[in-house]
Image: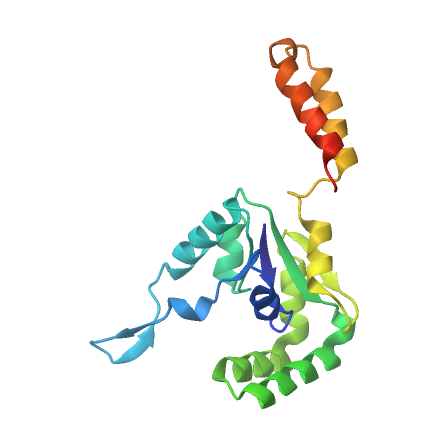
Length: 195
């Protein structure tokens, strides 16, 4: 699963707590141009960035990516499950304050840019993300557990009952006979699962 996360949503924090989550930092896609002596990005940086995100997602990771417009546009063509995660518009003032405090604590330029961007364009940016065509995970309270919210969205996770239903559906398939032993084995394994 790929999560297009609004700034301050908790991407880096969750990724440092669990190996299952990766915060694919878009700032890593800048480089120092020796000719101009300036930091630049290749014109197609977002293609490479999204290809890496898709590959990591296929390996079973939940990948957090930036919310830049070219990233969202490129991921709209992805075969991977992609969602956006944004704060509710009702949290505007609290969210901007959260970003201000984050910058004050870190002193990082990227945190300053995030804070200023939210102060200038919070409503516009969140609305744009909510309307970008992906499923939306909306944070409605400042006291939230991002990991728990994401587990609800992760399509790779099935309950024991859902797996049993899929097995029953398979048994009703006309061409099931050649796979009888394999499906029965899977069914016995599911019975032992502690899910």
